[in-house]
Image (cartoon, rainbow, N blue to C red; front, side):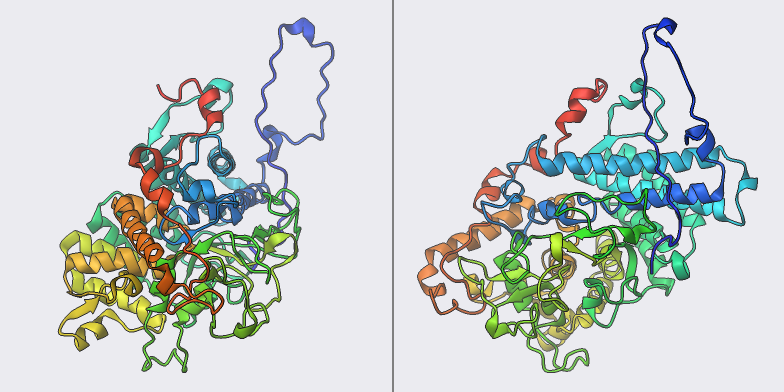
Length: 577
């Protein structure tokens, strides 16, 4: 399953600018006849495919699909960290315009945009006779999908961006004003996705598996309209994916988070990684695409750091996420289950004390490390299932899935809810996801409780019980926002964007901070030092303060989106024109 296997890549050159005072300064000018330039490179289908592979290669940058996503995982309600770890500035919402991830992600996204622009611009200028079959339009469609993907990430990370739709030829062409999300949607994202949707196949075969498809373009287009709050349009687009019968939920949810069964029936768009090819240096960005074959030439830096057992402890599941997964009630009549107490979804997502199954080769009774307030660790995207520690150099060969079918089902449920308050249809699609997870569905709760279901985001430990509510458009929407998208899609890059677009960041932070205060005030009854804590969370030694600072610091203008990096402000004179 290697993307673009056996394509010999050629280094894609950057535009450089030489300024001279006058002709007399040019004492001697020699031209190397063997040098690759823009006048000699773009001459064959093979060269365009080589250039296209470098666009795919940009997806592997650590701030786009790799380990640096940890800084975004801790922004919302799914993860905390400790004060001595680098994500702490993002957990506490004290990041600024000069900090690492803010600048790195901007730069990496624009590398991808630049590479895509090269392919798009030069292929449009190249005669059709250079290409075979549909290759010309398919190469352009892939490049335009990738450019749209990079711009979507840019727009919803920074609240907009600088639009570059062609390769700049002068320094002045690089200095453009900041554009809003809506402007980027209308100028780049929507036209690019519509072109990709019209010209990409539903599936690729053989060594082409992993390229962008019709489904990837359609999913991202639906997401654009969902974020724009154009609910009927979004619902219609998502329904075309559902009705296409191209995708289905995997029987085992874990297939979406490990290196086995990659590019499976649920996968819509994923970024390919290997732990053995060009492993590179620890933790840094790796971009081997100019000299290696395929997108599998690069390795993924592990997303959350190392624990003594070779696991992760930089990104730590919040008590809220932990408790919701504990309360992910197993449906004993679902054939997916086989006597397990933890839901299949919980077991694939977090490691807890007395967990079911092995963890890095250890039995649960042998696993330590649950002291000092740590009640759970992240399993998703880690190698807990087949190694005794994470690979050397903190690298992982597990692909990162940006789009999968479960997300489409949940986005469709949201769209029909918001379009016409159709909560019954929304429940049907939410329950498809819950059934695959092996847990009691909302409909089962309603059948057993007179049309009511529990508010599963409410802490039983803090509040004693979870209130039962009647199913209606608002209660189902709350479940979707506070429960289903959290437990199904946590640590996949969606959560902060979800909270921001719904406008509920402060509400969620305040609720979880209140739970935190209660636990601190009642720690003598819920902590049990030396005995592993008290169920269901088994917190030991202290209460970790995940929300004390972010709840107080949060400001919509400052924190919904990253600030424009200092370097762009200092070098772009037209940024605010």
